[in-house]
Length: 357
View 1 (tube, rainbow, N blue to C red):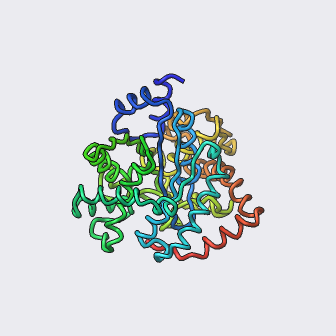
View 2: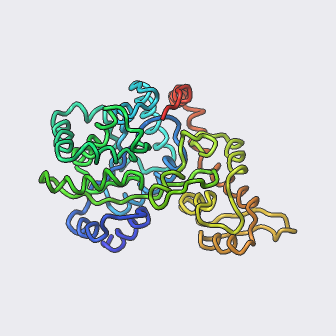
View 3: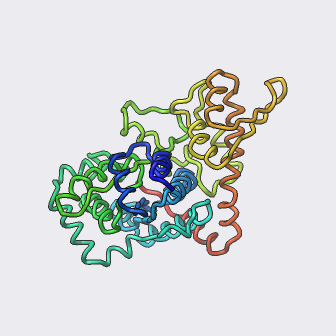
């Protein structure tokens, strides 16, 4: 595959790339650069972390990238997730991996790594210390965004340690590319500044889009901060679709979702169509009664945009279609957790945990 084609695939993943020119140079120098993404195991997993993540990882793999999925259990512990119970967090980590294995990710080509294993290395903690020594408490506090927290919410000393660890992770994992959400941008930029100072390297940042939740947008912020406020979150279960939701739950949540007529921007159902459904299906069929125009066959997201913007497709009909296709994608995961004994026990354990911010 030539460099232009590889770039094109990665640009489908990256809503922002720091920088495209550096990425091109990296692809010219290395045949298989290393990229990583990390997740705090902190409860049930939703479709943005499951299906959408699998779509993005598979594109990176197709572009020749060696991908590492990092289960950041110690980070969740530092951030007081699940009440700061490390064993519960680690169980959630096992659950994350189990979902990724059943939702379409090309796992044979992905390396799964847990922070619990990395922290045994003295070299890792040296890196954490080097990062800490080359930044300030004020700068680290501003990185609270990566933990889903405002600056003022960074209260525990462990939460100061978290960004230092995440920055060090990049270099410990030998990642040429950080392929995380836009909400992780601040620590990735810190890594780009610190890396050359410590004679390491400047990682390329490929930040993927963050899927919005199902509720009406209420944030008065702009840019990245607004996107973070509106993203799908497990802490708001009524506005997120989880990878083990029943068909009835999916239909109920989508039926209540924000979906204004003729509106594309910040419309969650249009986002799900763009970032998930048309990534998994070549075309979609929207069933309607003849008095409303009959069934619609759409072969691309752009076709969907045109008919919805014109008002030729009502939100009710769009909701029914989106619920149907999302359910088809969730069904294999849901069935796996019903039929596989170990997976079922793991899910029941995770569902019993009280979610904490």
